[in-house]
Length: 198
Image 1 (cartoon, one colour):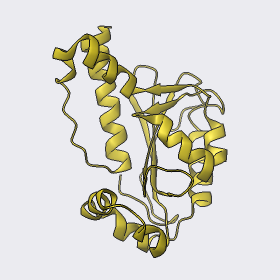
Image 2 (tube, rainbow, N blue to C red):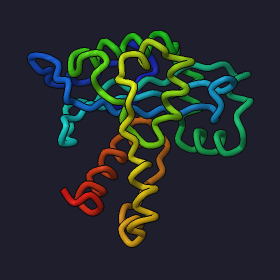
Image 3 (cartoon, rainbow, N blue to C red):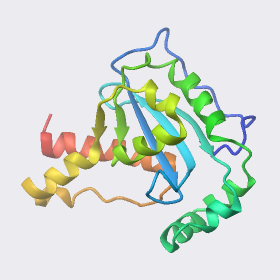
């Protein structure tokens, strides 16, 4: 799915279930201008819905959030380099989407697949995304259950308990929201099969 910079971008409509399923999992990733929710801002957000077995049900809209040049200029060298190479900085400058607009659209999308308050927030180092969501998209944060499914927990345990398995999954480090989500789902599948062995 292409990254939307405005709310009129058309994307293929996923098949919507007859009713939301509380066992579905909602995956989230955000790109931010830095690591501090009090001073940095969200610049991209995406969601993906899977069933409980990690089968993809729907890729949600991907929103690039407009931020001022002043905000973008405060980014450190790593963020400027990473988001510059991916093209995200230019997309942020061109976007007209606000955090509030993206938040409302994402909630409307998620309501089709999972009831409010049921899905844990799923992703990699997802606590960081939740911190930014509390500040910038509090209604979206409240849509989730308070629990998290954090793939990085399994990664850290695997490094300590089964280091020979930990190196088996190679990340591409694209640092775009949708690509990072899809990679997190594949990483969890890898740990399920090779570490947890279900």
